[in-house]
Length: 135
Length: 386
Image (cartoon, rainbow over all chains, first blue to last red; front, side, top):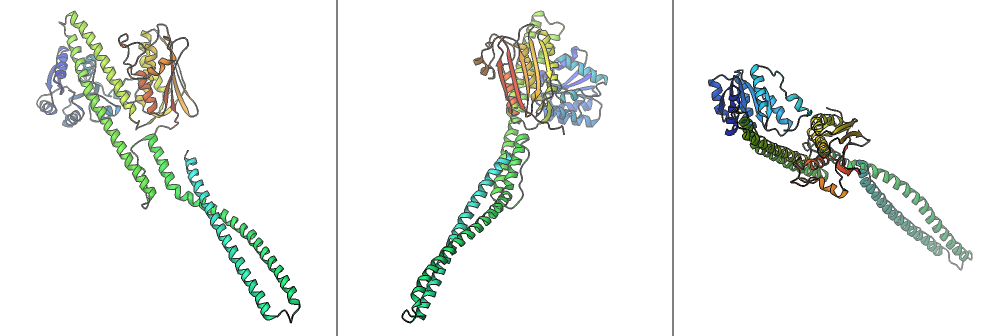
């Protein structure tokens, strides 16, 4: 499965890439929205991991969804309120994971997205503050 | 409260007006009385003078008697006239005074209505959200100036809080990003197949420290959010949130071998569900953490006429009453800093901050057998979800 990791923190992007390669994924890395979009235009990816800060991340997500390449988008962001999560959902991302996260969780989510699963984003339960901790 | 404020100014206006009217009316009555008396006196004097002109005392012997009786008549006329005027005039004055007072009461009510409207709107705004404005219609007047000043003050408050909200959002991002990077670096490094055991041990320790930092930052952010005005409130049931919180802490309680018992009656409030769930979770976390093995935690939610309460009680070490206020201070814990790595020391300060942000408060009472009972009181609200 081909994965594109986009994060403005270079260490973060490198660590995620290494971890995913250990799990058997083919991984490319970009550090900003422009680079990501360029790479998405050239190659086909199954999953896009988007760890850019809110404004940039939303914009890239929107463009990716609009391009309609069929790549699944997993957004990684620091959450301050459930308004953030709802906003991310409305951008068209397929899934959302709060930073900081457990790496095993990330791997599980990427696998699920790559399989084409996760029709219903898990966000819904957390939006109602149902027993999940505030990240 | 609205009624009494309204009544007091209205009552004062009406009484003042009534009193002024009474005084003015009395002055008029008094003036009229003096004028009429003078007039009558003058007329009577003219009559007597004319009489004397017409008849001379030498020709008419009856004149002397007539003058005396005239004098008596004059006195009777003046006295009876004065009494009559005073009596009837006084009654009339009283009657008109009552009517004037009633009119003043009505008029005062009408004039005070815009002020009442401002107070009501301000009350609603303060209770719920900073985003509404009074926007009083009408011609320029002192009342409209007041409403406009109020609106511009709300604008400044709204901006200030928005600024604070943005600061917190930015701070959250800046503080949490390195923590996230740390965590991923450690996770990935420890997952490498060739990691030596020392590396794994070091990794575990670093992860634990990182987690502590993460929790501390979360708590600080919650505290900062709680201290802002709670600008967006929704109908929430504390019993339901307590249920979620208990699900979440069940595992930790089992690990500590602490038994948790709950009695959750419906407790409706208007508030921020995330902050309130955090409040309950902090209470239960503390109750489990500062307990002893095979100890107990009781969680109770209840509703009274005007307020709701959540009470979390736990067994544990003996606490003396003078230690209790310190428990609510940030970063203060029951044991010294070095001794305990449990928790961030912000738990109860968050509980109180969230309670106060919602218009309530938190109290703690030590148990005679050891442990603590924390009682959070919030205003009740039976508003239905929109």
